[in-house]
Length: 357
Image 1: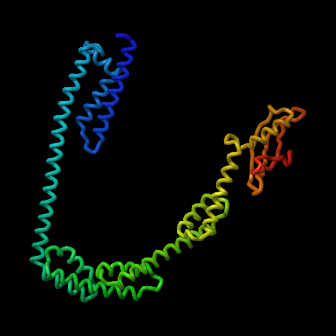
Image 2 (image 1 turned 45 degrees about the vertical axis):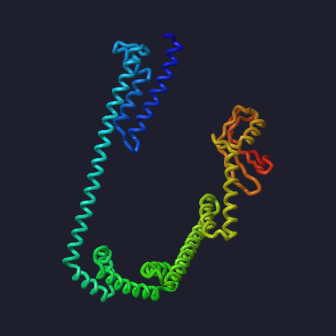
Image 3 (image 1 turned 180 degrees about the vertical axis):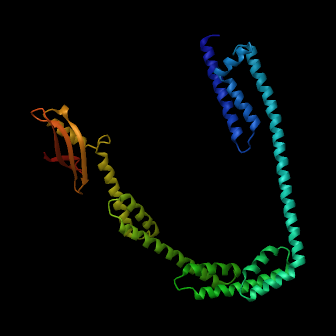
């Protein structure tokens, strides 16, 4: 076989093998989890790869691209497909039978629990109703409501009557809670009215009260968050721009109409952008200001002796103040430390040297 033809066939079988391996991996890891078919396709894809096939077939006395070699490959594919189909069908059948058994077990458990509940109601129903009425007389509606929830589907009229009596006691308790709550305790009143609406959905007074106090509770919560954030903002210095920005962004979201919060957001965004612009002017390698370094070297006796020590800078508002310390040789060849200061005009993108010691 000519080399170019073998190379072309190797490329084709590599693609085929990769596709089979991908399909197999997807099947093994998918929600259907077809393990056997996926495993076969994955292994068959690996067998198709030239560096595997060129070792496997010669060991069987067959060449990779001979007629018999293709026959062996096709035979493996057919037998493997049949086997994986049979095992996959068996696996699906087992999974289906297990699912059916689980459903039957759950159904039997529900029927058993329902039968036990029915037997309990028949034997203890009157006693439970009497006990629930005793609790109601003492102002306790929790136990009666529990009895109602448990036996509502089988208790009939006695349970429905108990439900009404428990609702009346709970309504009186909730109305008292609303009256006794502090005037600014909107959350307690909102929760009480929410429950009252559940107990008597046709009562417009309860619906109005719930809407009113829910709105007041939301507003009170919002005001408390604003107050807390403002306290945090006052405690922060101006310099941590990111922390201040996060606080004022939250404040602007809580109170979108507050122009002061919007101004603060714009202010700190501008500060952060300016800070990024300034930092970008300095070398990430040694922190120096390249234009100043170039200026210094051009005025040194021996530019090759330049050795950067450190550069410090500060934002002065209308300009950036820079101090750079370095070593260099003087006229006598001695290596001495030097300090140069400069100011950078950001708007004009220029700098001027202030001193050189």
